[in-house]
Image 1 (spheres, rainbow, N blue to C red):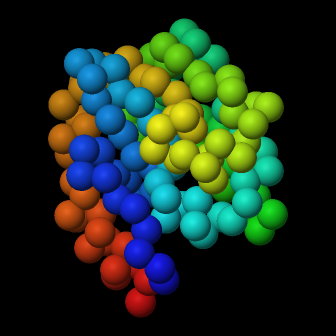
Image 2: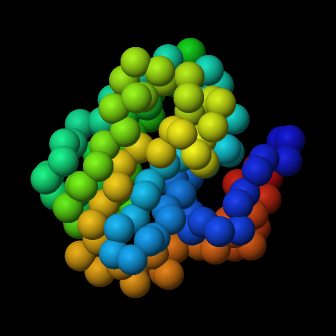
Image 3: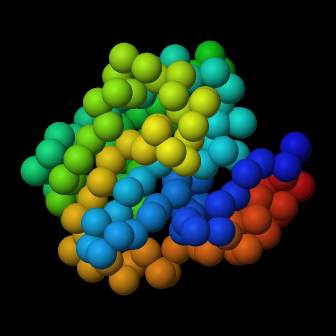
Length: 133
């Protein structure tokens, strides 16, 4: 497996989502590893809208590529305050900028400290090493 970008400023899940907290708002997207595994993204389907509540570990949408269809999981519970609608018409943004323009949702976390329980960059890199063996 080629070295994939893991940003030190983010937290990570076992499902290859990233989370970035800003106060009690947490931006969520998928990691470069996930993008690498999926290949060319053809469709991003976010099934929640602003005002909906998501549960930790539950799917909030799907992402489709030339290879497969995968669920997108919420890393924590809370209220959805923003959805990246650009991905509906431009799913390729995920391939181009998974840590930037291709964020998926912003959750107002019921408990923002949950972000600290997710893997930090070092732990995620270790997780990826084990996953690739």
